[in-house]
Each structure stands twice: as structure tokens, then as C-alpha cells.
Amino acid sequence: MDQYVNGRSRLSLRNRTQRLGAKLATTDGRWALVSSSMTLLVAGAVGWMALGTMPQAPAVRTNRTALPYELFLKLVRAGGARQLASIAPQFAPPPETRAPEIPDVETRSVTLDSGDTLAGAMEDAGVSKTDANAVILALGKGFNPRTLKAGMSLDITYNVAMIDATGAPPAPKTTVVMVNRKPVTVPVEEDSGADAKETLSEPISRLLSLHFSPTIEQEITVTRDLSGAFTARTDQKELNVHHHRAGATIDSSLYLAGMQAGIPADIVVEMIRMFSYKVDFQRDLQPGDSFEVYYDYYYTPENQPAKIGNISYARMHLSGKDIVLYRYAPRADESGDYFDPKGQSAKGMLMKTPVDGARISSGFGSRFHPVLGFTRMHKGVDFAVPKGTPVMAAGAGTVSFMGWANGYGNFVVINHTNGYATAYGHLSRFAPGMRRGAHVSQGSVFAYSGMTGLATGPHLHYEIRVNGGQVNPLRVKIADGRQLGGAELRAFLQERLKMDHLLASTPLETKVADVSTDLRQARVK
View: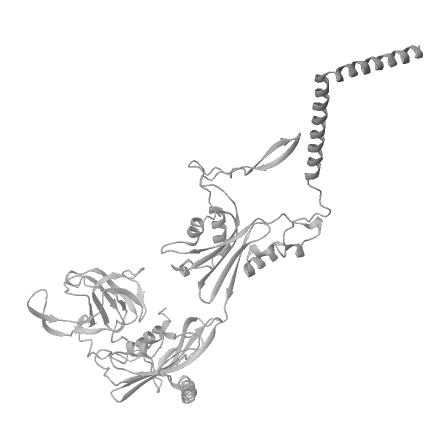
């Protein structure tokens, strides 16, 4: 049987060989052989080239890991998130403690506009309402929203998430195709036509931190911890105090002389308030008079003016007469007040001038009324000041009337002690929170000047009333303030002596200037 099979196989092979030889003997057979050989050769070459272009597996693979979150925030504040890529491997934790990778992080600065709230400004910048409310809660009751001012900058640090203008997730930028029965990821060209969706560059997906400075000496930072909760931290800058003894000659007004000497505006205004009980700035000042003041001013570590300090001493030399005032606090629980060299308080019961920089345009007495057109008694003093000038309460008291009073226009009457009252007319508006029955302190701003009622121009009509009758504000005798005595007077005289020694050893600056900044740039607070 085996011999039969083997013989049959040999016969079959011989027959196929004979048939192949017969085909090769023909022209068509030879061309078929050549064609098949060329096809096999090309297929082999293509396969060899494909094997050569296949990517090789790397010998070592580097894992991307995330920094610890607290360290990450510090590095972001110090140098920016984009700089972390080169140093991140140095901080890679062990595999069993690795945290999820941190997405791209950016910081955006937002400037507050007038009327903006903190939460509203964050939401306008792209922060979610939930995160904005969480930040406000983290700030707590100790945060005063009134410290926010237009122009203040907010630094918002957040995760970047690419979304389109409709809020939908981004379209995929890659697709998967099958090549030789294997999945291959290939890029997809973005549609640049008119129907392409507009993509926002850096919308906020997750707030990480908020940083702002409500005042020049304070910084507040709110950060998100690993649990997702927000924590607020307040840092106070350590301010440096500078002492100045400055003075100048008065050519026209105390305010202008102070500005020309380089003294901060808020210091000059405080001087006006100090001397307003003793000096009539309309009648008492003469060209050639002079002044000097010893004061403190605080600066940030970057030498930026931060805030006004105290005026410890001030002197005005008027027509050959010196008016000197020292700052002194009789008791530790009292704020400082100003006293003359004998311990007499500078404050009288009423201020002589309830507005700064005022010029008397009409005095007390009979006059021709410019609106009514006939002569009648003018029972007050008119101070010519621009509309909107702050009007101060001449003394502490209670508002007995606030409203419209015919020719007076907007009118306020304040009752003081001992039968005294003061009245203010032609006001443009009242200060926020003021009402009938409200208590006002001496020197506090309760209204603003204007020209309501019978008035030909902006000014303040000011009256002093004693037991219901108007008296001349320029001649009335006003009760003096507090007089120190006993132990308080002895302590004051000792402090006064120390101040005199300090003045003697401090040179007088006739042009105040600081190494780093000109004090004239300081604004009234």
C-alpha cells in the first residue's frame, strides 16, 4: 500500500513538472513567471521598510508626578507655574504616595471698578459663584468690605480649562484609525471656516487662590487646601516711621505754603483743624507769617508712603505772635489732644471756621440782598467755597433739624450745650447716615456746601445761635476747652520739655523730600 502511494506521488510530481515545463516553453508562461517574481520582490521590500519604521519601546520610562500642593502654591507665588516643569522631577514622591497630576495653572489680575463687590469681581473674571461665596465665607466677619476701593487689584490663581464660548466641552483634536488591523491615533485638522466655534483661551475651571491688598499695609491671601476648603490669611506689613520737622513762610494761605514746602496734604489739613479753634484763617493770616510742624509719616518696606502719623508739635507765627500746640494724652485710655504750653486745650466749644480754606464773602449785619433786591439783616456769615466742599460740625451736639427751609435751601441745625446752636444753609447734600436726632462729634463731616435756596453762587451760610437768637460768629465769646491741672499738668510739662529738646536737636526742613519718594505725592486719607 505504501509503495502504491509513493509511486502515485512520484507520478503526480512528474506530471506537474512536465506541465510546468510545457507552460514555460510558451511566451505567456514565461511572462507569468517574471510577473509573479517581481510582485513577491516588491512585497518583501515594502514589508522590510515597514518593520524599520516601527517605534521602539524606550528602555526607561519617566513618570510625571505632582508636587505636594502646599509646596506647589509657594513655587507658583515665587516664580510662576510655567517654570515648574524643569524642577518637578526633583520633588517626585514615592509611587505609593503620588498625587494626581496638577493641571496647567495661571494667575490673572483683575482691577475693581467703582461699585464692584469682591464676589462680583471674581464672578466677572470667571470664578464660579460657589467658589466666590466660599471665599467670602473664608474671609469671615473680620473682613470689612468697605476697605475695597476702585482701582484695587486682585490676583486670581486658577486651573486652566479649555471650553468654547457656548460652555460645551472642547471638540476632540485627535481621532483613532485602523492601520494593518492596529489602532493608530492621528491629529484632526481644526475647522477654520466661518462655522468654527470661538474658543476662549483661559477660562477658570477651579479657583486655587486669591490675593489682594485692601490697604497699603495689609495683604490678604485665600487658598484652597487639599480637601477643597478655603482658608484666609492676613499679613501685616511692618511699617517704618520717619520723623520730620518742617516749616515755611506763608505768602497766601497755610495750605498753599504747606504744599510748596513738600508737606503731605493730610498733615496740612490736620494743622488747619488743630488751629481752627484759635485762628481765623480769613482775617488772622498775613503775608510773611510762618509756621513749623513736627510730624511722623509711615512707609512700607518698599519705601512707599503708607499713612499719616501724629503731629507732635506745631507753631504758627502770626503778626509777631506765636501760637504753639503740643500733642498730649492725659490718660492712657484717651486719644491724644492738643494743648498750649500752659496745658489749656486748643479746642473751644465751637470751631471758628466749619470749612477748610474758606473766604468770607458776606459778614453779619444789614446788607443788600442780591436775590430779593432790598436791604435786610444778614444773621450769619457766608463762606465762599466750591460746591461739594465738606462741612464740619462746629461742635459736638445733636441734629435738631435737617431738611428744606425755604430761602436757606437744604438746612441743618445742631444743638450744643449751654444754650448754643449752630445752623448751616444752602447745602448741596447731606452725608450718608445723617438724620434728625443723630449725634455728631466736633469736626465730623455731616454735609456738603452748595447753592440751594436763595443763592447766587456756591457758598456756606453759617450761624451761631445763643438761646434761640443769632449772634455774630466772628465776635461771639466761645467757652474755652479743657484745662489740665495737678498731676496731669505736671506730666504734660515734662512731656513738653522732652519735645522742646527734640526740636532743638532736629534740623528744620524748608523743603521736605525723602530719599525714595517725594512726600508731596501723599494724598489726603
